[in-house]
Length: 432
Ligand code: GLU
Image (cartoon, rainbow, N blue to C red; front, side, top):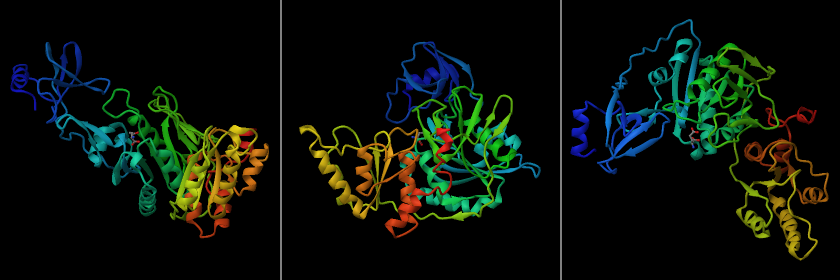
């Protein structure tokens, strides 16, 4: 609550929360004061979307808030429009600013979506269902299974599904889903936003709109990720979710394909849609089993044998080692500083006896090849297999899934090394 002084000042100027005002030369919307803040400081949401606190010296009303919180747009569902289900898991994409409560709040109802995405609601009938409500750093493999089960249940009822997801772990969920639900006959576009919908630079609207157009105007089926191609509002890329990675903390074009090509694009300005995918008519398969007992180790100068000892003690079913270059780790002992490398190799051999150990590359781009250098050959002889062109996070998800399909370590290795649903590319794709 603001102090009585401040409340009086606001009343005199006919200013209420949500109104656009100017305070000491800064323009923004007046936010409410949470119980803990200094009651003499005004909270202002700037046009950039950031909140600041100001001691009011000069204050002036610019515009009353028209957003009463009431809906003035009807759902406009019609039989002639395609039906799109928005499945929510949380993240920025699923929140809108609340001037009544002073923060962003989840927007899960179809009515909320219509209000947030009126341009989209003109073209499709929007439906909505909540699977989860979280920031994606809290996402667990068990949530991927819940999402997969929901998609499996509802997929035949809609012309396309938009899966709203936080961007941090979107690619992990994408990798998990594409293995769990293969050859889907419905299109599912995973969509996130790097900037929340209350900021002028938000990417939420364009990403949602382009995803919906690709789903309804092409014959795309299976999973895709739809995010900005560049930092301007021109084109959205449609990317293969198992081969994509968040490569920037905050830029709108953070998502890049790794060892893969895009599946298409939608130009928001011209309306042009490009496609680059092959349709297969193989049978739909659902395999949601996972073995979550998978550990990860990052190779770097200075790593110690005790780290591998620790992994042995964990009794993991699988371990992904993020190696250097073509798939290496320090296993050559040649001077006094490298004597412990022998111990690393011995422990690696011990770990591989009961655990599927995979070597992936920190390079991300390119393919492991452990036959080029002596180190790679020693590591393979210790029982380690390579991730080929799967980047480390994809290798981690694929290993969980491979181990979930069988009780045999040898079979799991085979499953891991085969391309199941686009996660391992042909050698020629990027070397050509
Ligand atoms: N850490 C949040 C998440 O990944 C960031 C917000 C967002 O990207 O939606 O959910």
